[in-house]
Length: 522
Image (cartoon, rainbow, N blue to C red; front, side, top):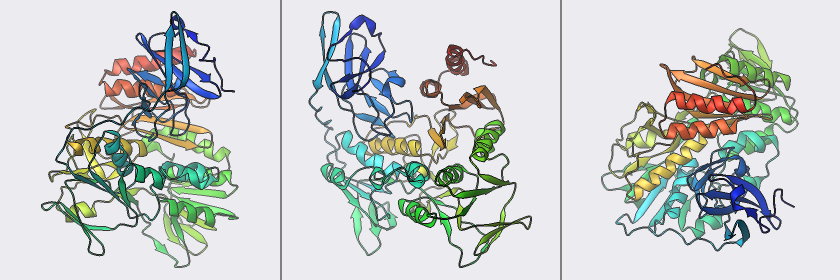
């Protein structure tokens, strides 16, 4: 039996405050009941992304945001409005009888949105990572009735990339968790998904894509979501050594196979991907050594104090670090470091960052500067051509500075905004960047974007896994990271969306920690 009250029996209207939410059940199904003004809504109680408990999330107007990864749903229709969720929630019929609210069986599905007639007959999307996949889905969610072509070099269905270094590599996630959608979903949405498609050039004047093999595809609007590729080690490497990189589903499968029964893995790069890979391999019993230049790891993004805490966490699980070191040579069975010492391995993995895939854009004559340059509407220097995801360099809504974000949720939201603008909207991209990183049973959430992490203030206790970190650049709060404080993360994200003051952001943090009896230093 699902937890909470039986919503078919009802709850008192006065017991549910305006803006309040309660988790209950209808039969065996967990249901969220929410109130806005004099109206109540009932939807499935768990996020369709990773099953986050929506009752612990944030209600904004007639939407609810998931506490775990900040997906957003329409309470009236159940539709998934923002990445990282793609699938809608079920909705339920709500009736009010005097002072009682009762929830009955599932409501009929809401009819699809009908888009206004448009002269945009065909939208092509190059790249099917988060940006491309969410863009294709967003077109249909918003009622676009024209042709949609989604092209990817990958031979497999578009997949859930963050899971590769986490549950999938650790062996907890089965194969059927990894595709974002099934083949039948693309067919039902009339999305022409082209796997193994290699786009060689773009003619922006004639609005044509040219594929390997000679096929030309005409488009009215184009979304470039070519993503990024792993940086490769530039050191002398024995031909017998197989250096693994983790970016694709196929990469993850190769790495899982290579580490079956492996005694020792050496990971070069103390990055998020490197450390998440280390945690997953340790959970499978592989001996892991991490080689990295920064000491502590992640200090450039999260600051020294959190970086040192992350290092201690990994060391407590048996990870060995060689920090302040670089690889000088990779032999068939050992990594030689720049101090002459060696680290033997059965498997060697590199996670030293990524490079934006701008080659196609450059050949097409688009403006490129550490990414494809786009305006606030995500349009490139060529009319009718948009860019989204890891490859796009766009103006920050927080300070107007051009930024490029390499995070899954940000890529999905960029793709969604680019899709709406390709349909004809003139919508400025104002979404606040968000990412999460998992290390064993610890999950960090990060909202905003701080170019530096040298001015950071820790609130709460990292050791007690109840903390927030405030990052300032030139005296202004640009980002906040949290450890098991989803309420703070959601509240700060909303405040940044509304461009509220630093004082308002600090008040959110102060109030949240005061509830649990913790003082804040501001």
